[in-house]
Image (cartoon, rainbow, N blue to C red; front, top):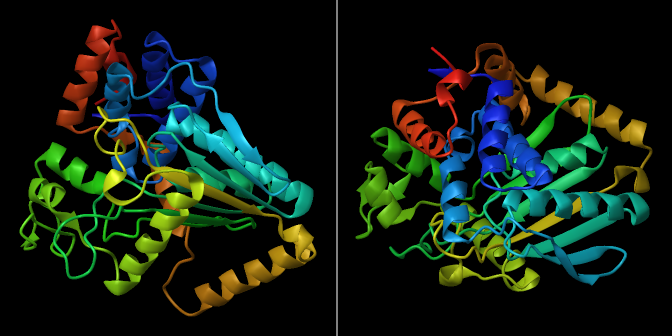
Length: 341
């Protein structure tokens, strides 16, 4: 069965509204959810949505969320998310970073006491739409073991970078070989995972997602991914008054308070160079890359997936359907009215 873009947005909003979320939160969570699914990051879209509902039930997501700006200068801010929806807190943080960038050239906003926010690139895309460069990093509860160890200590610690131009130029990736959500999705579907993704609790390679979740996910590029994950852990932990290492909780287990941190950076290219010149040179480089052969610019694959999803809708597997059906039944929502065969 499949669901269209508009129906997915409507379904998410109706569920959240019945649970007591504000209109703004319903809108932002729905936007972030559909963004993930349209781009093909289904592990962070509707497939991850039931986790947020469990968080609401457990009280780890605060429906009365209001961010608190704890520290601020013209260039930076530190935000306490007060356990609100990660999507709402992150949207406000990135918009504040963009505002500062437009005023003085750069804006950097740190966040703690928030929640899982979906795909990292949704927030760097906000910067692109406002004509500025966006960079977003975050830590997560332990998933990667330090090189040479077998016990997970670092998060999958994603990074997203967006460059404003006529071409959609965007990078969104975990510092692990794959996102934890991919293992959660594989476990839900009863699928195995590729070799080279994860180790079991004893440090042995595994293709069983459940064993990988009990063990650790490998960093991408061995020492390179590990080193980047390590640095992001510090930039989104101690720097922003959030947890780090084994003290990070709540990004995968919805029953625990979310203690991770985020960092949002916006740069206004017009404060460095003429914006049209920057755009022309950026496009020229994209063309240089394309002229080298059958390759792609970061962001091309997402553009293709979005077009396909908007045209054909997005698939919902049987197990996700059963999860959503149970949720909707409790809320007296007819989920089948949103779906297509």
